[in-house]
Length: 159
Image 1 (cartoon, one colour):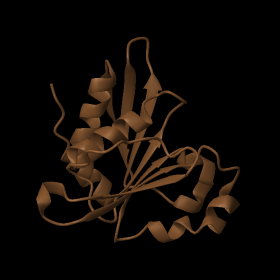
Image 2 (cartoon, one colour):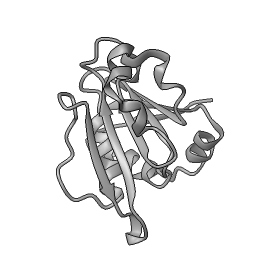
Image 3 (cartoon, helix red, strand yellow):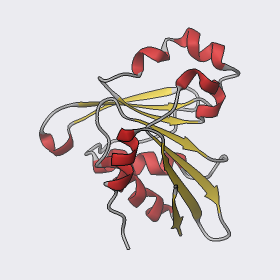
Image 4 (cartoon, one colour):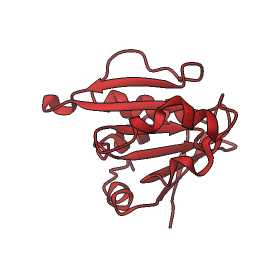
């Protein structure tokens, strides 16, 4: 059953990202769905800030992927890839791009617009659907794997 949250403003969206950061480990995949302007990149910014990234976080709409190497708690390096497939025309473009090599046990992948790739991506561990609400956003989190279920159950959300 999805976790249904109200996000009254951008700060709440970033806080959700910060909460998600605790479950970001190599091999994990998060799909972010929602209309343009729903706050997908804002959530990713919250994830990256919580993992210690201090630089700019932008949507990779034109580059398709932004790589990050972060050192959560200064312990070990985490390779994280932030994808935005909005500009892809079909799954064939994804297949020919070589992006499949980014997904595996060595890296965490956060994917905006996964529907542009169709079934080629497979099920994520966790899916976040953002909807524009009369006030702020509505967030629906759904796990699709045992790792996603553990990730979802580990969230520490502000009250």
